[in-house]
Structure formats: C-alpha cells, structure tokens
Image (cartoon, rainbow, N blue to C red; front, side, top):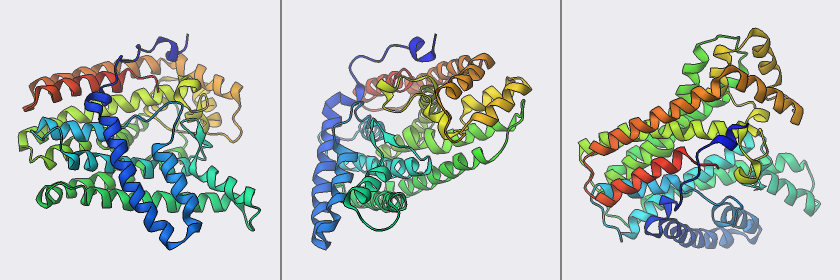
Length: 377
C-alpha cells in the first residue's frame, strides 16, 4: 500500500477560507495586476503574453487550486496581534507574499526542468510554445527559459511594490520590511543549498546528508512558508516581542512538517490530486530529508541504485518504482511520518501558550496546523 493511500484524510472546510480570505487575497492580486498590466501594455502591446501568463499563473483556474498558505499565515499573524479583520491593507500585504511565491515557483520550475505546475504548462514551457507556435527565429527552449527568468524577476519586483504600497501606515510597513527582506534572502539561500545537494554522491550511512537536508528545509520552506509570514503579519500590527518569538517557535516546526508532507507527496502522491507527474521529485533528483534518511539506513547496493537513478535523464516509470521500493524498504517514510507527528505536536503546544490576542486567530492557526500536515496536495 502506498503512503498516498494511508495518509490522513484531508481537513474538511479549508481554514484558509476563513473570513473569505482566499477570495480577498485574489481580489487584492487582481486589482494590483490590473494596474501593472496597464503599465506594461503602455510600454508595448508585445508584452501582452507576459500579462496573460502572470495573470493565469496567479489567478487562473487550476485543477488543484491555490493554497495561499503564506498569505493566510501573514493575515492571521496580523489578527493574532490585534489587527482589524476588515483592514484591506493587511490583506494586500499578505497578497504580496503570493507574488514572492509565484516568483520562486517560476524560477524553481525552470531550474528543475519541470514541464507542468499544478497540472498546467510551466511558465518556461508556455513561452517556449509561444516561440515555436509563432515561427520565430532562434532556439525556442532558450527563449522560454529566458522569458521565465524575466517573469520571475518581475514578480519579485512586484512583491516589493505591493507590500510597500499595501495601504497600511508607513510606520507599520517600515517596521516589517526588514523581515521581508530577510525572508527573501533566506529562501534564496535555501534554494541554492537545495540545488547544490544533487551535485554530490552520497554513500550509504552518510550522516551529514540528513543535517544538510534539514538546513534546506529550514531556510527554503519552514521559515519561508510559515514562520516569517506569521511574524510579518504580527509586526504589521505592532506585535509584542513575546508574540513575535512565539510565532517563530510555532512556525518553524510547522513549516518543517509542511515540507516533509510535501516530500512524501513528491514520491508517493497521486498525480490526479497533486497536479504533478507521479514520482516527479525522483525524476528531478531532489535530495530531500526522505532521501537522506533512506541513504542513512539503506544497504550499500541500495545506496548505489539510489545515486545512479535519482535524477537520471529519462527516468521511466519502472525506474521510479525501483526508487520507491528502495525508499520504502529503508523505513525512511515511516520515520518521516513520525517526525511530522512530533513536529505537529510541538507546534500545537507552542500555539496553546502563545500570547495571541484574538481567540479566532488561535483557532484558525490550530486548523491550519491540521491542513498543512494532513494535506494530499
């Protein structure tokens, strides 16, 4: 039986939808993009495909939907510090994090040579198809890759623009902005370390790989997905130092658990649900904690097979299944599941004693713990 089949049932009633937050974030993005599209099209109508691609990527219909987790944690960090529920500026600031996430995903897909994102063509493949379908001169793949770099850079610039002009008082934005800058530095560092790992060959029992994988999780995912968004929302509402620290202690284990669930889905997930091909992480050669734990306990022969096949060009379904067998046989998936449970309990314990001012914020954050750790996509 696969882990996808034995995973906990999804949470009923997504807590991200509390107070219609997802729709409010989408509305803030829609308004912002409309203004930016006017700027681009005033430069040249040839930028129409850029406008369309960005809008589709951020707001278009997708088979698996949009999680908006970073925006949710930012908003509920705001609410937990006493911020008003009806403050549009807080929603706009939270929505800025979705522009940062979109930038990271566009670049990540290019670096990983991913053909799809949530069941639709990735941005570099979309521009590659535009080049090829238009009969233009030059290399279509190179054009697609270069376009994705520029689109990702544009989204990063727009993240700063939306956050800075979100509508909250200037002193609130100035108070939080250094943490946004740190968050962006941390995720770029984590992304580089993640990219660096596949260049190495890991022998069986190589313990250093586990610690390196945990460092990648901390900076590429845990801080970026949960901890920093929560703290950003809190700082925007002038949170106390105690609450800011509590958000940090709550967000780090929850963010790690979220990424560990993602790693399991990347190997065992159902593509009809995740929107990614089965075993895509194995084809991309990702050196996750799941893989590191496998290599720390598997036989020399299995380690050799893992190093030979992980990320191999043209890895087929049979190769993916052989890698899954090695990972399952090592016992690593069960250890990862146990760690997710322990991290979840650590986060909940911290949340229970955090000096949160709004009871609804505490309840939604508790439900977000369940949503982040028991999800199927």
